Length: 248
Image (cartoon, rainbow, N blue to C red; front, top):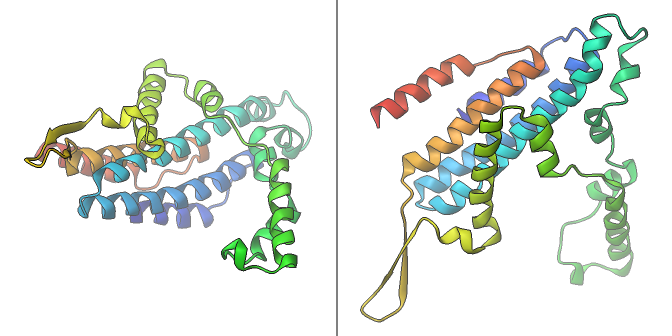
């Protein structure tokens, strides 16, 4: 499925769209699918190595990608629908520039991009004074980037209350492993060796971790299809997922 996400990007990149609204959603979709493919590859690889907890934690990224795209789709639709219905007269980009999807896409300051691409990623202590100053300047421009709040995107982007609660719960559990907070202990079996030192055994199975990640990736594919009007591979992977869980 990870390879399927990458192929989906190529499919969208070669597609033509009827209006700028769909084209912008396709741009966000390609970005999020690319990140999603890398996350899924990493999850599968880590799971095979027995690193199931951190693999499960990475599922959070797929949840965030789905919620972000859903939020942008809802945001764009409030301008796209009246434009398509002829209630707004004028070029599509008039309404498009009012959307948060547009603002966020072009919100990365050109100066910050320039500095990012020209700063060697080394230990700052090894950099000369001029390079450290340039790096600090880059970090200062980061304040100009307005980032979306997760809870706001979830509330506005996911209309179905049941799905929203499921995403929120899964997000909290996966976040526990990234933050190292007490929620991370919920699936651990705690025991004691003869020496008296504690041992921790995960209750996660390989199917549980990879299955959760693939199910979330499948939802992302569906969201991309709905947002862009271009479905690719969803129904095939949906059948394969059903067969996988039936066999286990």
